Image (cartoon, rainbow, N blue to C red; front, side, top):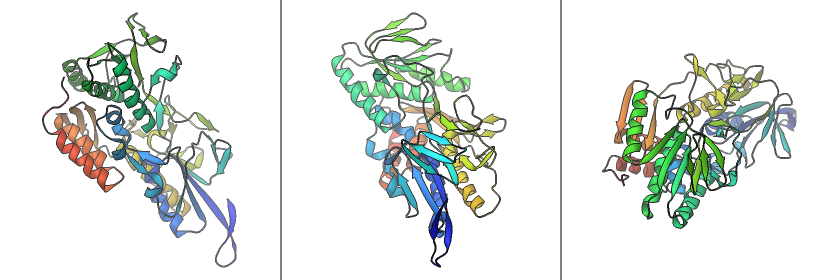
Length: 401
């Protein structure tokens, strides 16, 4: 904490509150904390993100496939913040819990309270072959790169084949969007999904997998199960089952991990790097640090919550509110997640479950997906665009070849 002089000429201790990440969780936390920084002169609130904009991450596959334009996926961070927040367009690559510092390159920022909401990135699980030719889908730049380079690939390739490694949510969405992107080219691309397990979406119920398997088959999307990538020379892939795929456009979507690995100090993390938290989202042994969204391993009903937008927003809001309460000397209540359900978009249909009770299939869940993306968006124009898209999703099918 640093000293400042108040209106009466007395020295006050300046409290530094730092939020890392301007995604759903980070922005929700900041909105709660703004009330504190605007009303108190002894509070400095800082928000860090590597980009000057925030992104509607669930729509990245649509951008990669050319379904949606970039303008409707983003919001400029500084325009979303109140006057009580200082924004730093810097990537925080490490946190020292003992020194109470966030580290961005050569810069170190001390904190009295911290919200870790940095999100997650693709987990390559040690794969390191010709990564310059491997396409991930973590951010806006990745989606634009896929969109541009896939078009170049389609123009030059006589027998185009898009290979998506990973049969989870993002992998399946990306596969159908690549097929959509290739419809304007002749020949149309073949698309296949390579999944290490013996089934796609291994954590999902059988009825969900069966539905998506049928949808993939109806669109000639091949599912290669029980296989992984052994070798990739930058052009051709050799799978663990011995099959060779030549001149491919390779995308990687095998799960996610914590956005950065360098967290110094004593903390507990689960397999994908998420931080174990108390029920009020603070870190055990570090009551000044809170984690939210994809950074937090939040236990609920005996298991860790899945990564989802509604949990990110709500946990970010609770983390920010609890810091505000702690600064005011009040009790910090636990985070109680409310599960609104989930939807997996797949081309012109979707599948999901609402409120963990009501299974939905077909065009309605796809429309609900776009409706919620609009509701959670960053401007009125974006909201209206997504809601028009949601209405369009209820119309005639557009994706079959």
